[in-house]
Every structure is written in structure tokens, then in C-alpha cells.
Length: 125
Image (cartoon, rainbow, N blue to C red):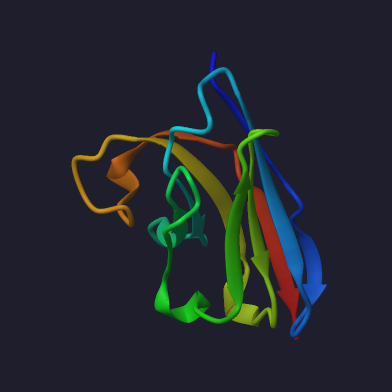
């Protein structure tokens, strides 16, 4: 059974930083492209960042370029997302995604088979 457990969310002041983690078990980790998405109430889940399985390629949504870093530790089977200079508009539930189907674009939610339960990020002004 695949388990993906996010952690690291919380309440942060605007301008602060957070590092989100996603621990994966029950499936091979190192051969899988992975991603982070986020969602706010009433809105669709949106792409944040993605990383190739050997961490050579990374991709970011425009609003996160220069502020976020996606990384992975294949030995520990953990995916990370470091977000700096947090803005109030970054507040959302952040989800990690795995099990890429390679049938569409890396930024599409339909591209991933497995999801974590989410971790809440709240940013105060």
C-alpha cells in the first residue's frame, strides 16, 4: 500500500520560510518523477513544482520561481519543498504527488496516481 505523508506546514509570517517534506513508502521512489501542488478552498488544485527522478530537471510555476526549491533524497524516499519569502497568497494546503503516468504535462493533476493527505500552510501578514 502506497503511503505519502506530508509534514512541515504551519503558521508563518509573510517573508518567512518553510520546508515541506513528503515521506513515501510502499512504492519505488527513485524512479518516479514527483511534484507538489497546492489548493485553497473553492479553487482547483494547482501546480507548484516538479522534479525528475534523478533530480536533474526541476520545474516551477511562475509565482514560485526564485522563491521555492524542490528537491529529493532518493535514499530516504523523501521529497522536499523549500519556500522562502512567503506571501499571504501562498497560503494553501500543499500536496505531494507521485506515480506519474507520462501521458500528459507534468503540471497536470491528472498526471499523478498517488497523493498525500496534504499539509496546511498559513501565512500571516
